[in-house]
Image (cartoon, rainbow, N blue to C red; front, top):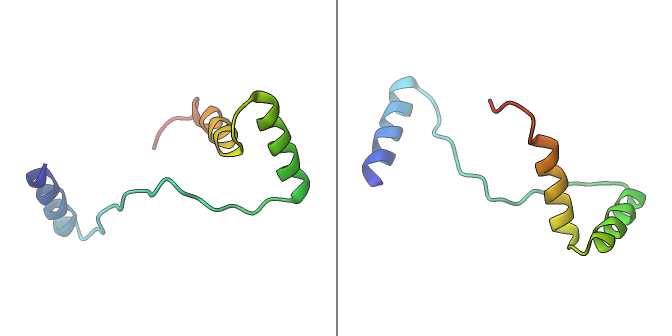
Length: 68
């Protein structure tokens, strides 16, 4: 594993690119209070947490998009 990382870093350096950084899995968004209320109610109705509900909606929204 360490060898693969070293190779990746060497390729980035050779190309003059910054190495990609891993995503933390956390995002912060600002939404209107009414949308917040609707999402919270929908999550409760579906028996899931607000976080789980939003994560599922985002997953569904990206499911059919081609990956870059």
